Length: 392
Ligand code: AMP
Image (cartoon, rainbow, N blue to C red; front, side, top):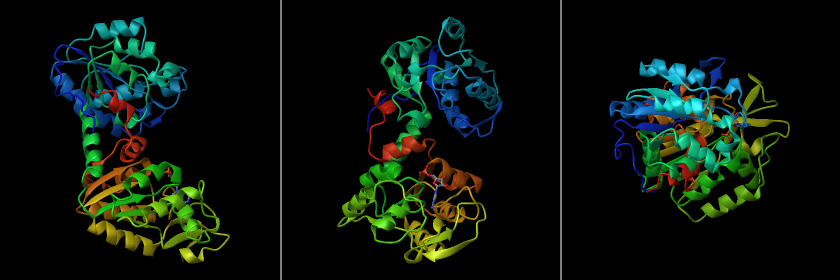
């Protein structure tokens, strides 16, 4: 693991601290509909303010593609942050330029300023050096707390670290420590649960964890290419990507301690629609005109048994078409099993986290990651550019 400073190692008293946060929150017009990411940044912001810093926050929101678009303004995030902090949050009209530089200069200890969306400039995603330097000129210290963007080499996540003393925020530190424990001598049995639509997104994780995990339980649409490789007919089920990939994964696992378990039954329907007529079918009998939309009850029972014995769990991706009832059941039951287990559990990815949150189970998870893509890349064993940039 890279060695880096955290906010406990640096002196911020009386300084302007430029903090990259992940305020990429869902909006309904002018309102933040889920403030989880804003809340996740509060410990760092509050700690810096307590130490006598003034805080300049920067973030991206959505994909405005390098153009100023009011639809992607961070103003609603400033309003929500002010409510959560119980103090004023000044909103900058831009993220660079003279007016913003003046606002930054006028900040006093305890003040909070939120810059406008850094992705209003294409230079952000291009990791443009001059842009990074201009952002850096606003502060005296750089803190990165945006774990969810740490897998991106952008100006505000990597380029900027060249120009200022840099440190990790508390959220970044916690994410790296919790995810790091998965790769560094995890207590066994180590059970990995993967789902979702695309094999391609999760292939790196499977590759890295073969030989480390005791079980890799595969659900969701990504199970079908594996079933097909095993010689089964999968009807109209989703089958993403080149079959050589799941084939090589199954071959790689052979002779290692890692058992890759695929569904033994599925909930199948003729169409992908809410409340579509459906039946439980063993995977050997999927008819040509049907598609598997969730793991079936026998698979759920088998996965529950294995999860109950786990000492370490990593879960990413839904077990079925979680958005459409009743194909959410497999995901919900797995979520309950993970929450009930005594294992150290780490969950990442939008749908798996949503399943836990909706069921009120998130507090029973050891660590709910704020970064779907970033957590996958970390568990793949890849270096995250945002973390490398903080390295001493
Ligand atoms: P991903 O982004 O790869 O994690 O995939 C998430 C998506 O996978 C969700 O929108 C689910 O609806 C979808 N999904 C899960 N299981 C299936 C399935 N059996 N067939 C089709 N889509 C699925």
